[in-house]
Length: 370
View 1 (cartoon, rainbow, N blue to C red):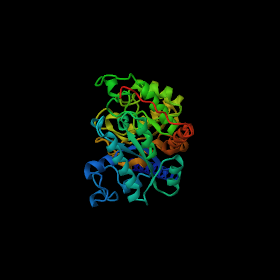
View 2: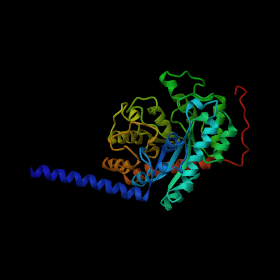
View 3: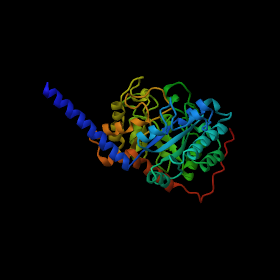
View 4: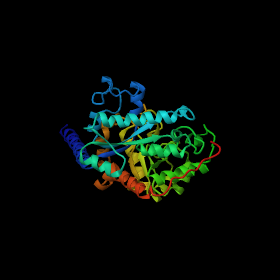
């Protein structure tokens, strides 16, 4: 009986040790998350009206994300998703995307003590110093630019710093992941000629290219064309869960070659290919991507408030320290942990900024098919 008690005590003390170490590391290097859909929840629940008492982000209930949960999770940087559904394509996608970007800007204005709207890698570092959450805009879906380089540029000027090339629908210039599953027919077999121009213009502007949601052919086209590293803002490892939204091994090798980044998604269907998953299984994906693509190629893209089924132990954004404790338990070094927390994303962002060239005149390419 005493031996049982002793081993239980040792296990508990060891668990606390890893958790304490995780908090120490994250206090020095806060986590940057690649994808959070809280702005979509604000639209759905409150029609974008942040001033409503029930929309107060300090007391907000029924979401994976609010200000106390962000603080408990030691989140220091967040790409907020400006998402509009695929059924807005060729209709009002641009207007509705602008409205979602406006929500993100108003979050920073309403809670300046918590959020700092960021448009550069240096802004993220400033937010870290000020103990605020660097708040960046990721536009989730190429349909949001309505096949217009002019709209792409305008969204950049308004703060967009990554764009997911597709959501779960093809655009006239790029194919989505449902092509690989057989639900959609390929239209571009990857990137069309205009799609290549979009990639080049994103490089010129300094907008990170996000390959979550795209077809494998699109991944290969972009990884061979882009002059800067790219990101997968919320995707996991296909080898561990064979869902077409995940990243296969041959692409992970290209991620390594191009110094790109995969930010692991927590959606149970992408983690375990079923409704139930665990924190340990998320750590498996992080381990796997680190081993195949390298420790500089892994990050976090929880997809909070955009999905329903989340792993046990990671039900909201406050659970991040427990995940970091699990990585430490698996013998990740402090350097590897800090890279995954923030430095990998900062490195990619800085390289994207270095490739950008605003002294070059913008491309006025127009496709006659549009």
